[in-house]
Length: 263
Image (cartoon, rainbow, N blue to C red):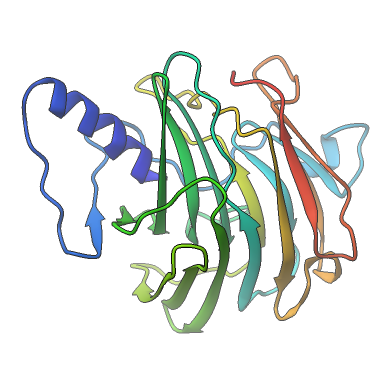
């Protein structure tokens, strides 16, 4: 996702004494500013080769959660409570989102929230992205403990509707946006992400978010546990160690993620 690159760029720009302007009152468009873009999953190997050859598990360096991967998807939805970031030192990043595409395709249509550590300070955001286009950060207040519901819905052609609702702060957005290419609609996912990328192309450090939970996770209007090709995605570091742990699905719709390590 590109919004992290703009956060990093904003930090550099502020250090240099430069001001960045918001593109609108409700959202700010950000560019990569020299950082490599994020977007689709970065698989360690195919799901058939991950963790003992189980076809319903995959290892990734940037995603964890659950995804339907063998259907044609028109909607995905989930709810979660924004976790607090524990920030000790250094810059770290964690995003929580729902989306269509990105598991086996080159686009991702997604919306969610995040917590980034800028040194010892936790900063909270909500956003949407039509990857490979730039991300948009909503200017609304986000705090730890806020309750979110988000839905991505395919409309037609290259167009999607992205909905996010912070019921705690009392705001919501419905954004209709288009891709520049025809979407595959080949996956639907509910994800915790360690964003990509550093200047060298590596994954950015994962914020310590403790434990957070997704509920009401659906794909095509049904429990995501019923989605075709349901795949549990495990986030690992370069040595194959878990960066967080993902629980089993409860009721086909709910699961938790627990932070383990940043790198």
